[in-house]
Image (cartoon, rainbow, N blue to C red; front, side, top):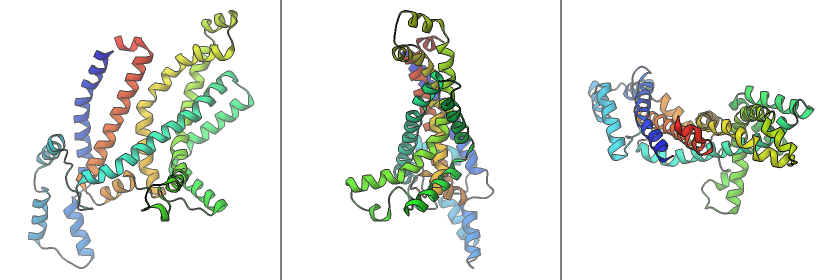
Length: 328
């Protein structure tokens, strides 16, 4: 088991390097750079920057170097100093912005995954043991609707319905009176109210997929001979269900962690802009629009590393549940 984990971790290093290269390439794809964007903004405001000012800014931000030199410098600072560079847009270290925003993104994404499992597991089991019933068809229909509706549209509809029925506008993680207030039970309650919609929106599509996966796996296992044998020995249905079929059917469920985490993080980036949440979404959009290469690259790199970590956790949990995987 330990050797398996070491091998999986070893495989992550070349993948992390490849992701860093892809992240750097992505932020370099738009034409121009931050200085070019700054020049356009200055001209639009009626000021024509001189050639000396442009060259000075390019030298200051190391944009006069080749792409290879920029990448090597960027990655060297990250690896040896934990320095992601300075944000052009916010004029502050990228590490400070990431330390403030990324934990919120992780917390919301993990909360969404928890909501998905809490909703999906009972419904998936019930749909399997009551297959082709009215409830099974209802849950199937709800699942397909959850998969098909875009998250940002679902978020807008929920915010509108809450406002129309209660007069309460959900924008951000806290209401205005609590944004700078010290932590107490009232601020926690306000956070729970505001975070409910992001968790529901992020959890709905993933929960719909998990329901279908668990239902399919449970139906396969419930037809196996060991279930028939257990029934013939007089075991109760509940004991049979959770001692045998569910323990095997949960394996495909564990494997979904590898894509649930990146899907939740990616969905959060879009939905956070719609709901005005102080997470990585609005910052990433602003960085991309302003060609803030260090900030955009840092966010993309960190979110990609989270995806790798999610896959690693999924592999380790699967190996713990199914010993056959360790010897592949």
